[in-house]
Length: 422
Image (tube, one colour):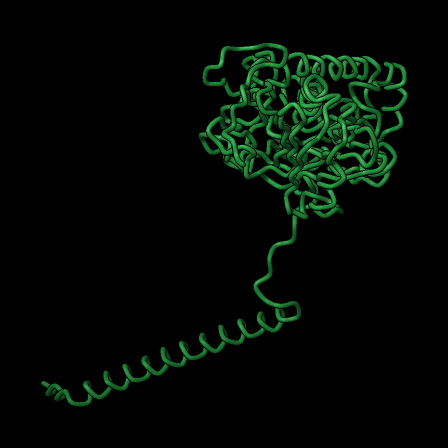
């Protein structure tokens, strides 16, 4: 039986009157703060409750490695003991394994009926929508009547059933969590000194630090005044310390406001990073867009400059965003450039990553050829032969015309009577 969605949307920790809910919009893609907001809501409202009903979507792109029926039967009668998170992954700890885990991808979101949860742009379930949403991939009803749903409108998320989530991929491959397992400043400085890779790409690498995605990386680099393409090992200790501080402050502030981007500080670059280049400013300074770490990157050239040997070689050319933001609504699927691999930054070993050089955007793709390989020379010869033939025909016609003209003149002259000699 379907019910209408009566979810009230407010900031976590606050209660509002049951009026029309204020919609909370967050970043384009769920990162650590958004997933942490969902985890905290589950921990507050769902623990020590038994699952009495489960509905798993028949969607093999999202539901990974298990049939809906097996998934459902493994949940029924189990009690939710805790909710855990590492990076951008969340899993429910039940009273016995296996445990459901959620890799949020580009638009994954957790909703609890009747409980304030942060909404993610492009994945929000409106108050008038059917509950559970048609985008629901994982739905459970608890013994007290509370209902929880994991939705994914864009189908880049992964929902798995794992015996030991911490010790198997993808969670086992993650680096230390940016919030729960931060490095000390000294550890961070030493670590960066060994990384000969652009700092933006390094921050996106989930095997290095987990939980930082595109918008957080842009924000912390802007606030630390570091160019996204600056090689990590070339950063001075002062810059490393500033970056370390900004990572902590940005994540903590985002979590403090329940990942509600409307409450992010006004001087954050976040609020302008999806605007058109000619209209993107922060604190009166122009924002430019380049590609770093394979992602569209917002930065302020006036404040974030390359240093050291990179400064002399750099020729930064702002890259206009290829996507166009459409006005109005959460169905806007093309307002940001995102990777297509489940919406997650690819976890690779640092040594195997090839990063764009600061002197440009990498090699340009070869121009498309109009002819098949091997046909170019023949085509050129044919063109030359055709041109020569055309010139020859034209020359012959002109010569013939001149000859005919001379004959006509001579014939006319021969017909004229000769003047009599006086």
